[in-house]
Length: 381
Image (cartoon, rainbow, N blue to C red; front, side, top):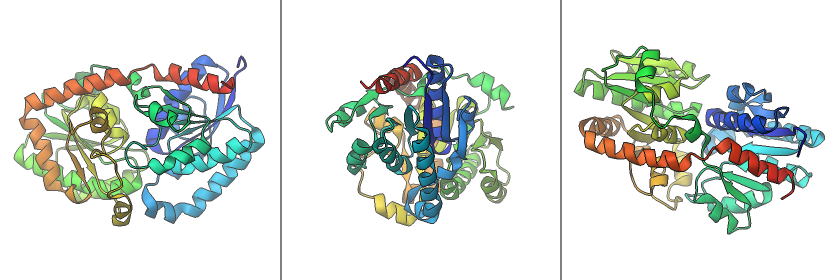
């Protein structure tokens, strides 16, 4: 395609907005006049994206949240589908959010719109039944991890390994000293970053154990300094928890700035998800935490095909870092594992070396490789 295409896009929550923003940057380098519209957030808006609905509308997790919001979600998807079918963009790109995007992609594909899905759902982990949905929904899948295309191609699904755009965006050597200065943190302090997640449901379940764990850690090591970056729109949830559970804690609460916090810290306690991969790219030893509504946990428990949840462990094929999930996600356990990293510098250095290997594996000039694959879809290849 020689003319700049018009594309439709949907990205849900902060991690999808980040991925989509980086992808748009690469697409616009190839097609400077490219225009895009749909559902997105501030990172996409910075690339000229026209958001018909804000990305936080899709920032839900699990069956309970989905049921509570199902009428609004279905209404948005119906309206969006009608608008995209009327516009007929050159291609629609669904960024993650599979429960929302697969149905939309299937409808658009049946209506003659080419579809690309960016981020292969974790069929290798616990959602193998999604393969048929992917096959119906997507003309092509852009995969973050090197083992995914072969799995999809076995089912007749076109796929390309594009690496992870964060691996291109995050430097191999994190600027720790510079970021400490930006965040007004002492150069010689031991800094622990607390990342409670980017969804409201995650914050409700995870922020309190993290804050209580920080209190235990500070009692054991009084000189510790804590930072907690908060995703946009979540301060109203975080601030009361900080007032209740962080009295006397050496804590700085930040509006966003999670990358600066990860670069500045020595270790991090964080919610499972994209943040764990970001922490690995910043070469930070971590403790992965996750809690959810009991019903959601009952629905997924026992359905995973491998023992790991955290992306650094999935990539490493071993427990490089501890995972504390559901009942194990207690302040005492979090504090114990966090202090263990601080007390074992040799172990921390070994995991940093493994994270460097993962960073190099995922660094593929994702925006360009993805743009090449999308160009092939547009050409009908």
